[in-house]
Length: 306
Image (cartoon, rainbow, N blue to C red; front, top):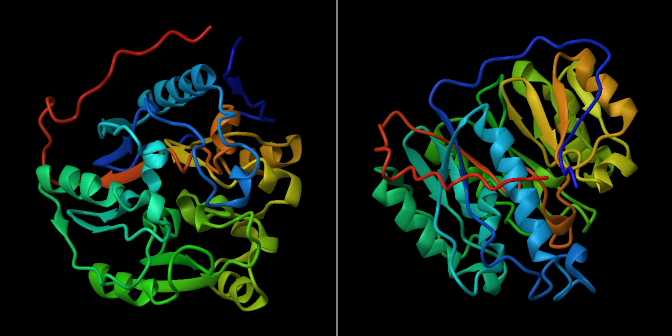
């Protein structure tokens, strides 16, 4: 079965080059599964993930991302099924990283493993208060045109995380309140794109947060996603070189992304949706001016995908 479908576009978009020094951190799904329930997507899914298909889907995403941006890999750990969702490891900008303080006790053992990975590669670990929940780039998304960080709160990360991120990274942090439990992390309903474009699902936010978005992003740069596309995790997307990798995308949304100069690429991730994750959840953008050795940035052999 071919698990990669390239979305049709109305015209060939102008593809943007990947940001200099950009890398993406991933974690192989060796120990992935739905072993507990910490978000609505996991309900009635315990033990139901098809691990063979999950591996094929992850390999497919990795292969296509690897053709557009450099990849790094953190080793998976037994007993930590959600470690595959590296977006939650922290927020890394330049050589500084704010490592996650997970809200769910099931994921807290991941913190030390991710911290060790960052420390081994020369990142400066920013201090973070123990009592402020923060779930990394799941709830903290740097804008790609303005010096600001979009910060989600309401379900996982604490509202005060934004002020700490503003201090650490010396840029404005805009708090956005999430009100729909299906969109428990900001990256499930909002995706900053290059050129100042912003793809998002308005229904996931309260009125004040929608106003914050409107005040900072011009209407012609906002790509509003409807509920059907949002439920397919269209906003949980990864941009690399003008291509936008996502689990699903309606013809209408494909057309709007193409008109904005992006090439939507559908990489089905149905097994990971059972755990409440998509393309963005499976990746963490890390930008560092420090040179990694090729040994530390290990690349597993590509699996064949039929």
